[in-house]
Image (cartoon, rainbow, N blue to C red):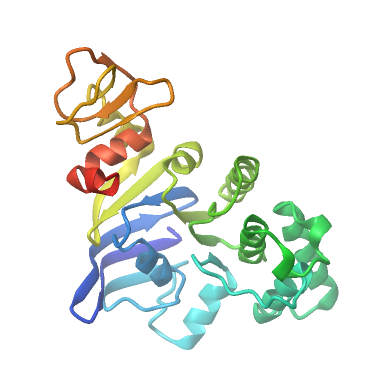
Length: 287
C-alpha cells in the first residue's frame, strides 16, 4: 500500500486554480518536489498534511480517506510528521519545551515515554545540547532543526517537509540528508525545495510542478539525462541560450539553445535539466 495516493486532485483559491489533475502516489523513500514559485508545491503539501482539503479528486493517505470523518483525519495525523514552510515558535519556550508541547498535542500522554521521545528527536537533529535554550535565542538554522525534530516525533510513516533546508549551513544540510536517508528506509518522505542539489543528493524520484500540473514524474537520473547534449562551457556569453551565466572560473555555463562556437560539452546536472524544462520561465527567473 502506498502512503499517498492522489487521483485527479485539484484545488482553487477563488478563480485561481492552484492544482489541477494531480495523479501521484508515493511509497517509502524520499521524493523531491520541484517547481517555481506559485507552481502549487505548498498547496500540494498542505493537502497531503491534512492542513487543507482538496476541492476535486480523491486523496488517500496511509490507506485512509481524510474527507470521510474526523476519526480518519486523527488516525492519519498520528502517523504523520509535517514541517510547514513557516512554523510559529513561542519565543519564551525552550527547545525541549516546544517539542514536548507538540508531543502532547500528538497524544504522547505517558510523561516518561514522551520525555525519551523528545530527547531522541532532538539528538537526531543535533540539538541535544540546546534543549534548555529559549527558542527565541536560537539561530534561524537551529529553529528550522527544531521544526524538523517535532516532525520526526513518533517515527511517522509519512513525513511532509516544506523547504526543510532553509537557513541551514552546508554541514547542517549534510546532517539533514543523513537523517532523512535513515528515516526513508521505513517511511514515505515528500520534500519540497528550491535546492536541486538536495534532491540530487537525497532522492531517487523527482516530481516537477509547473502551473499547478505535473510536468515531470520519474527518476532523478531520467530528468538529468534529458539535458544530455544541451549543456556547454564557453568563453563568451550565449544570448540564445535558455539560461547562461558567468562562473567563478570566468567561463560561461550555457544551458539550451544553439552551442556557442567555442563551446565544450559538459555533463548536465539536475539543476541544468530542471532549468531546461522550465525554459523561458527559468530565463525570466534569472533576470
